[in-house]
Image 1 (cartoon, rainbow over the protein chains, first blue to last red):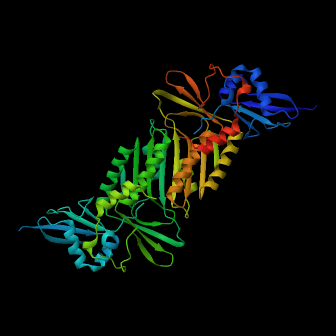
Image 2 (image 1 turned 30 degrees about the vertical axis):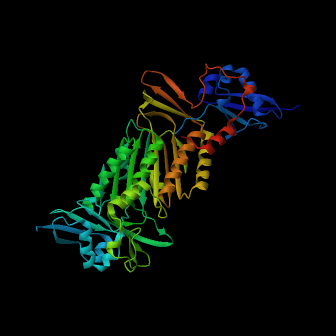
Image 3 (image 1 turned 90 degrees about the vertical axis):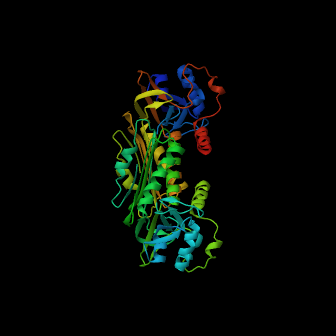
Length: 84
Length: 84
Length: 167
Length: 167
């Protein structure tokens, strides 16, 4: 089975929770965003505590949990926005 | 019976209708704005044609038809406003 | 702050006037001279005011706006005289703690100003005609009932329009 | 026109950008740094953006606003970096033929921006504390259900909020 590589970026309180700006993940082909989330929540319990309040984007667009990730995707994980 | 003197100002289309900026009227004491209006409408049929669409103010405040006029009052007669 | 002026309105100055450390939101409304209205081309406009009453009326508008909305600072400036296409005829700036209030206050002020403040606009059209704008005034050639048949007077009508709100 | 900038926002320039001979109305909204929020005193603010996505998101916001409202011209500028009390964090200017549309468009843009565009505010309070603002995020010490129990994801939630409108 082929592997794909995706980059994950963290922002604001999500960055504080992981203590990192980004991570590179090797995933099985056809991994869904929901599965990646499980991987990340397992690694960073502080991030997992934010649970469903976190927002997720793939390649600069908000994404739903069942989207299939592709090689080179840039995933972003962040809390509800507070600009304006 | 005493007489009072009031000034009447005309604006915009009301001024065009009377072809004058203002007039001074001698009225009986306790004349109501409605009575003054009748006097003016009789004198200027072109003004009378605007009828109830005209707005009336006494001393810079919108006035109702039953207000009693006093010596020195400044009455203004004008069409619906269109500023802004 | 209210003002009636025959000079260009200083929009930046008006905006700075209402900015405040307690405010989270500022809304500025500008009325500008539009080229086409219902397909007719405007060349220029002229605003005439009953200046003395207009100032009183604008002051009352400011006072009532402050009662209705949690306004921190507000400025209303109306232009008089000749204006060209694109010129600003009226500027309203308002600051409030939160944004929804600033939009509501700005909209209420301009809507109410357009009903109450004795200022009239004369349009100069590109075909050479000129015309007073006076919403609801019948044409001078239309015949109406005798004055005694006419029921409502200015104060009642202005009050009724205010409470009904406008379109 | 959209822009993300770490410099002072040029409000007069933004306003001039949207003025147009076809426009009868311009509405400008400014978000400004407020000193007190729910009784807590703010000393300064810091805005951090996911800049690449924020620009895409602002462009989509402009495009969608133009579909929803009869916009003649629109400009949206968001500030990043450190801001002091009274500074402008976001400026939106919109011109339309008539005034009601300009207010509606300005309000929709700021309401939607605050839900969608990936920018976060960190408050520095006068008592020395600092705190990310992230509406709806549970405190990191609150315990939540396991990840697998969590049903909704970003895209669905953003869409739901947009259609519901906000307060």
